Length: 177
Length: 341
Length: 121
Image 1 (cartoon, rainbow over the protein chains, first blue to last red):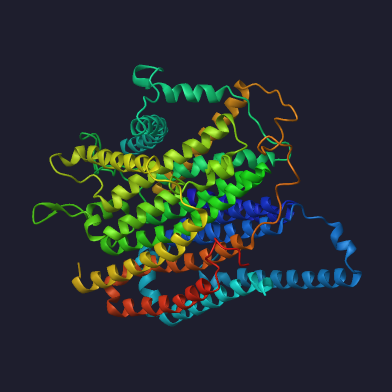
Image 2: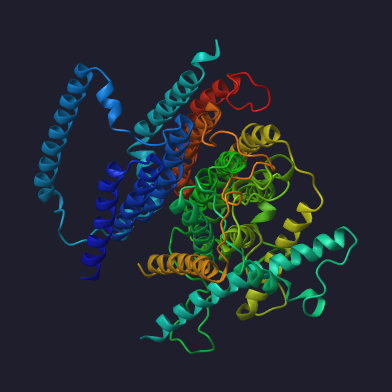
């Protein structure tokens, strides 16, 4: 029962913070709220007996990706997000971007409904938690699976990282010529 | 309430107040050691040998006016020091400081001497350390002052650069100790080789220890890596605009972080509470001695070495420390497999 | 579970202490603002322009490269713990992984993204 309460608390934190992210005028505040949302998610992982995922969520998402976001926001110096910028741009662009946005939002809703509906077969979203035996999610087991069953995926990840590295340098250095 | 629960609450409060005290003690020690190295007296008027100086400082700061630039982001300006201090306190929560104890038989079964016993303790420290960046970068940005902004940015770039080497040094210890729990890692260092040399990881991982300490000093923004507050170029860096208790919070976070880095280094490399002559129940004395020695080293460094230049710092971190840390990890891995230790 | 609650308690204690001292000093301290006190410090001269100007793209680069290597470090922990079972296969796997990253590292180095001294960008 306390697990259930904690689940709703942490889930609520994640959802409310995520909603507030898009409601902020100041992008720096959005970044901070996103970190709060990640903290909520991290707590949910702990509840699901996956402490490694919880900690990695903090290290990678909250600790590295959000620092990058913060730097980019500060780099571009987007002080405040003004709505009237959209009205200055051509009406055509305005309409197209609205339509694309609506289309994507619709797709997301469909995907969410499908995921929630099919989740029942995977153990249920609101089903009893902490069912997974701790041994399954221990870091050692993850390592074992990663380097035997998923060894190929692991090695390919390094190529992905390599591409990202090259891409970052190319993007940042384009005007050097 | 079960006795175990009460004991845990007592430990939590004890650690909290010890961290508060350690910040005060470190302020005093820092000033006394600096005075010693510079052949002057240091604080000596407030109380015997100036021992009440930190208390006087706190009271003085408490009654100072809180200044804030008009264009500053009021909320973030206050939030930033709170983040710094909170992260500093939280990181120590998973650090064990003594052997498991029953408190003279008061408890049925022994509990570890630490606030939070989690099985991924090493990663929790790494995660909380990575959160400390926000206190500094937000204070720099929210002040809306050029020096503060530059200091905050520089400092955050420095912290993330050295975090990689820090993480890799941790990885090498994990290989040796084969665990993510700090208590298990410390217990893996019990005993002696040839009855003389303690089985501390520092003897197997000298390179790892040096990398860890260098990265730790850079993470805590201490000299010779104290760029965020390079007085000659940045006034006071990210806390230029801070005064009164908000300023004190940054100061405190710095000292608590030093204590945490020293404590983690003690647990990972110097055998934690294991040492000769004392029974296991008094192991925390050894722990305190080792942490104290590392802290003295920290202070000694600050008053001995000049500050690096920023480009030297960045290229040292990325071009020297990171490759050495990666190589050290691979060599350790090969050794662990070869000797099967 | 209990351990995690203790960490949360420690975070709460730390935050409460920090907020408490800031509030207390706000109560005890005087509050006499003048335009000079509320101006950002700029060595005595009146502040020029806004502090939040666009900054060097290098900070973005360093954050991006940090993120990528951080992912690598995250992979190292499960590897370190399972290495005793994996043996030399695990060792070769991480060496291949690191060699591919080494190519990226060499590229980043060659392009001068790690240089902070000379202004080449």
